[in-house]
Length: 387
Image (cartoon, rainbow, N blue to C red):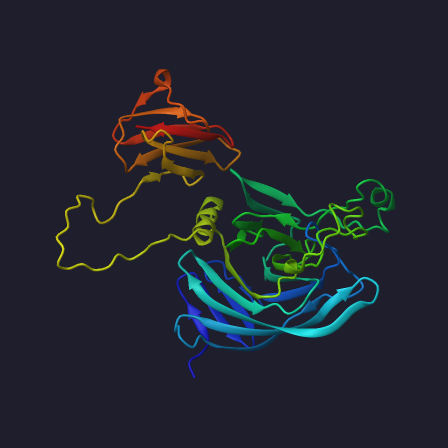
């Protein structure tokens, strides 16, 4: 049989008995069990996770690995995860059910290992997470946030028993170990960067931040109530006690992640992560060989190009008055940045503007050689109109 190995210039990926092994060639970093699945009971609600520390967590067991039946460039892993079927605050875990998890693994063009995870959720009152290694020891990560990279530091664990005065006061809310992410999380340490990009999975946590730190990405949380009281993180109610059966997520589920590692510049990592999170969308036009084309546009083109990877594009759209194009760019770093914006659309003038998009004749400047030279203060956002 052909060995279960995927390889390109950046990675060598292999699979055996449901275990995924990833080696990054430039650094030699090797992860022997690079993908695990963790399940915890959830006594919380649609607002907040409710830990149940006296039970669990449960970890999936690798079942097998094989080539994808239809795609020769993809490995397929299968895990089984037997967990409580539900949880009752008075009676504890109720019954058992098994989640059969299938993961398709391929080498992504975004210098990453792409993971497409599928399963049908048959358990209530629980949280399922994908857990991936970082090769670092840290309490701090960078996550994608609006117009910036946000530094997220995991707080020390506080419980109702360790912080009774805080828990007893209003609103009795202790520190959340999870953090929000947009498109990705980056962990830096030991001379390399590890990143995990996602498509629509906004919650992340650093596990074992004082040891072999892992990234845990929430795949789903299943709960049955809009709001409950007496949780171990939030004491008071955040809303009315209304049943939310749909929030138990009893349905087929799908998640897409990309795992990358290496001694890459931060700006390069951001480019790879965002390209995975927001893949280009294209639709093939039907072939019409007997129709003569009358268009004068080239077959390929670019709306704009930015020569500094630390300056990112947030918006490119027609202006609200249909006169010209609006650009919004921002400096993703805490240092001043200069950038040249090469325009792929005709333009004679440009001016700075704001969210209301007014054109300012007094501030308008000529466009020379279809390019704009801009200076950005730390974390500055600039909105421009070009005509």
